[in-house]
Image (cartoon, rainbow, N blue to C red; front, side):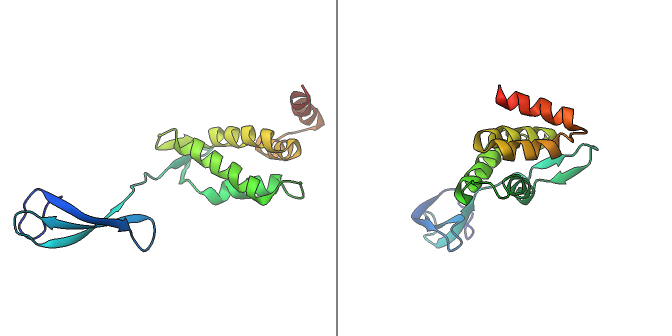
Length: 149
């Protein structure tokens, strides 16, 4: 880290601790050249994720949309709230681990369905019926047969 006072290119870290917001690290540094001390803050840089919708519009990723879909699918189901939040965290982790700056909404939907299948079969079918836009009872039955196999 370059000294802000004399411009010397190398400084030492004297003390490190979490900042008040708990999302960054506060570091006290000392310059070996001029002896002055200063504080720096380190924060993880996150790349905004863009979701490509069906109509090719792009919008910024919004966790609340996944939460709303999963909660709607699990409505009045015997699934604990902690388990729902855990599944949402797993979905988000899987999305961000792809390390792409853009992701099609179709892939997000498939990830959600995959996680819901393990969580609760009824929640899975509810989500799939909206996500896959079931047109009639036969399409619905075909999806149910896939689960039962």
